[in-house]
Length: 314
Image 1 (spheres, helix red, strand yellow):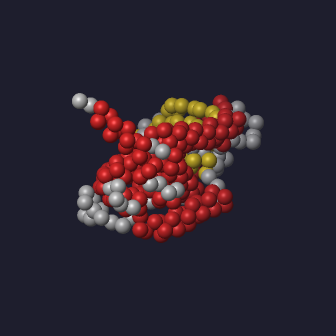
Image 2 (cartoon, helix red, strand yellow; image 1 turned 30 degrees about the horizontal axis):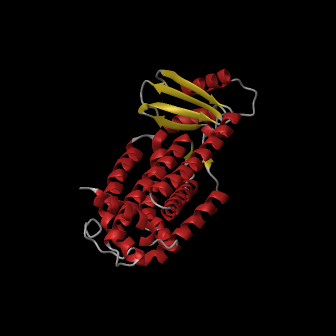
Image 3 (cartoon, one colour; image 1 turned 120 degrees about the horizontal axis):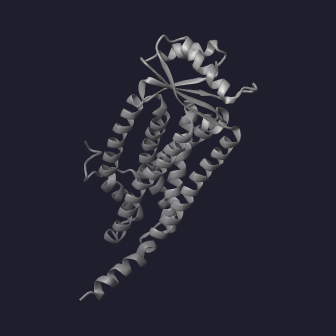
């Protein structure tokens, strides 16, 4: 395949205006979805009760939902957890003056009424509204702190233009990924926050590999224009980027299909993030570098230090 050829010579940067327009459209649509549809916050953020139940034989989730509806728990969310015989029931905060023990008893009785075998309650957890608000704040801060830390690291490791390019690509990835999560109303819980942080790390890895090659190629291709150096670097790292993304996607797709409902949101978010991150490392990060006017003179000091060290050796 041409894309996996180590000596490919595709004019990626020449199409950067088309890519910029595509990214702008995706970001606008993502923000529009976040504003109009919002995020489908899970119990980690809204508060509520989580009950894990084990059945003697695999139950039909539709029958489980019907039993809960009959007990007045029509807002309960039923998901398989691990084995087919294990389910998780999530109940949003309720206005009634019911204790946690009373509510868990009602749930267990409703489940038992619609099932002839044995049922075992494995776990009961309650998240209050105040805890949910704290988790929301901590989740946002985690993403912000990660971006700030990445900005400072790349600025020290490379140069400020590279730092801006890396963070621009990561912000691009987070916004679009959250937009897709919002569009499909995927339950937004702590696993999705973890997936977003993983997307940031994964996308940054591809971007750092590309930036390192760009830094190496500026002294080697000193007579070439910056746009030619960047395009050459993208082509040289393309096979590595695509192979890494494809192998990662195979694992994530397997998790999404066979991992059960409890991990679907995590896998789905990572699938979207890996695809968007691969695209952004090629177009967004490198295009931002060029728009900021990166040149070989920005890296001249690094090159001189290396030459000086070599000359000083006997």
